[in-house]
Structure formats: C-alpha cells, structure tokens
Length: 275
Image (cartoon, rainbow, N blue to C red; front, side):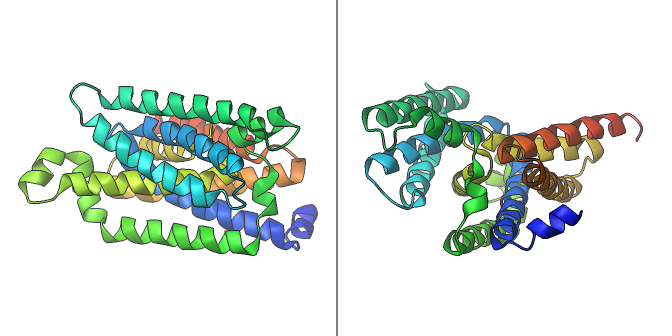
C-alpha cells in the first residue's frame, strides 16, 4: 500500500486510472447489449479495423492517431451493420471479412512503410497493449473524458429504446421504434469504445473489456437493469485491480486487466451455483 500511494503522487498514474475507469465503465455497459444481441464478436472485428487505422496514421505521419483511427473505425462499424443485413452475407461473415482484411492490410502497410526500426515491437504493443496508458498527456485524458461522457449520455438518454431493440427488435419496430437507427447508434458507440480501449489493452484484447463483465454479471443476475449495473461495477473494479497490479509489478497493462476479468468470471461462475 505504501508503494501504491507513492505511485499515486505522480500525475501520469492518476491519468491512467481515470482513463482506465472511464473506458471500463463504457465497455461494460455496452457489453450487456452486445452479448444479448449476439454481437459480441463485433468488438473483436472493430479492434482489427482500428489496427488498420493505426497503420494508415503511421504511413501518413499523423501525430494524433485518433484523428484517423476514430473515423475509420466508425465508418467500418456502419459498414458492418449494413453488410450484416445483406441476405447474401450474414453478420458473422461480414465481421470476419472486414476484420481480417483490415488486419492484413494494416500489417502490410506497416511493413511497406515502416515508421521505426523496431517493427515487431510496434506491432506487438499495438496488438497487446503497451505502457502508452501510463504516458497519456492531459490533452488525451480530456479527450477520453469527453468521448466517454458522450457515450454514457447517449446510453442513458436512449436506455429504454436500446433495451427494446436488444430483446425484441421486431416488437420494437411494431411499436414505432426505429430499430435501424438504434442499431446504428450501438455500432457507432462500440466503435468509439474500441478506439478508446486500444490505449488500455491493445487491439486484440479490446473485446475482453466488453464481453467478460457482461458474462460475469449474467451469472449473478437475470434482469437487464441488474445485469447492466453489476456489469459496470465488475468492469470498473477489474480495470482498477488490473491497472494497480500492472503498475506495482511491471506487468503488461492489458494482459493484467484481462487476467483479473477472467478470475472475476470464474468467481462469478462458482457463486452462481450457490445462489
């Protein structure tokens, strides 16, 4: 504890904890909807697209990756939604097609136009996360706060409609809810969260932030509201625990957070049998 309090005196550690909590909160809230709608894999697909966006930003020598990565990921989320509604290309096939293509072209671009002499290190840190979460500037922290606030505001504002679209899209449409519009909103929010989460856990581990808290909460509760609240709490606690573990032991941040989430999921599975 003494060592932890010593680290907390440094601004970059406090910035990392703030950003980590915000990202975990947004991811876990949306994760409930994505899991129930069987869209869990969309997070993994968009994370691969974000990797391609980072490669493009590197080729263009853009200092702020998010200026390229965010628009590319949002556009891809819209394309995934539209393509998934095509009867000739099902949703899972569309996700696999776009994600694999983005990953392949991203790695190809990084090899064709290398921005540093340590290509393998750049690729590894992008895919699995790095210490970038501990080197955030105050500008990046405020950008994350603004985007996270926007995501939370949209989720709270349209909670009832998202609930309706999640459980029975046909009934929601019959009641006058424009399901396509809210599916699009869910896809865009997912894209924003994935881009934010890449700084925390890397592109390959982004989907863990979305899936594990929701699945853990579903082991303990069965109502949508209780699952959503429990998912948010478990997601934030897991992120904090993983960040603190990584800071104290010099472990990779992303892997530490996901390891804690897996442990929490296992505990929730055990508790489910005794409830």
